[in-house]
Length: 415
Image (tube, rainbow, N blue to C red):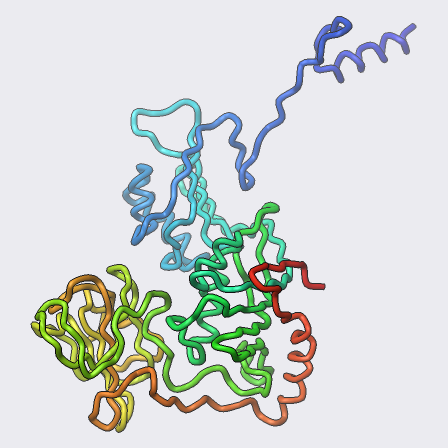
């Protein structure tokens, strides 16, 4: 009897200390605690926000009433864990509050979506803040996909539901080779890349291994190779030649050409025909403008026609000029050296301009020439001692870069 009595007690406990349910009624479910990134949230209030453009960590703290020495100490503790200048606009952050609130509403926790693979977690419950950088549950899958361009590279990638970072990374690889402002519908590409999955959802692009870009009837290949001598990953074509050259193909990432180089154009402001010795790129105000090559700033100022402009001397033969900027990048002034691809300012509509755009000009030995016809020397190829190793990498990938059927997109998981 004692043994039977013991079993009845155990059964009573396991059923949640509830009396026996009548036949036909469902048992009452037991609520399990709910966690978000290791923090229990089922008995809390969670505010979900996004990092705004230019927002700093101190700005986030101020917004959630974490201020003074307490905030400064939390920032100091963060510094050794994460580069706070890398906070990316558009990423999420969560402030988590207890159910009982003081007169000044302050959170118990702050969780920042710091990167695709990391979270910054702040614990404000004690007299001293605690900070930890936590690795997310990340899975990386290698994929290959082939797409026919529809409209633009950026839009094509977005329309297929793939993170738009893929388009940006491809544009960077072909910065020296393909003029993306000249892409036509019917051009296509095939790419092998690593896609990042966080908590089972596709969240970003990690690395591009190989690309075949069919542009204007010609195939342009690019393969990633980790140089064992430098420890850096660079991209080379099928022959082992570097994808980089002295000058970028364009000073903007994505825009459209609104006016070409010509000796006779009707000026939209002056209402007369005159030469237009440059190329106009229409783009939203604030779009970053990049120096197409390394050099020294010879002019940075304002003129009535040019608006805000920068002129750069790259060598004894070549100069470039960038007109109608809304603003100059920090540190851009006469005599300053700039690197290839460095942001020197932002698109605007200053000077003689009817809308936001960049007028880009190129000089060769003191004469303005069509930037589209400039010749750029290639970078150094791989050393002969590394070429065979590189070709093995290339051969392992090139078979996956297949042409898509016309107007059909083919996506699969690469083995």
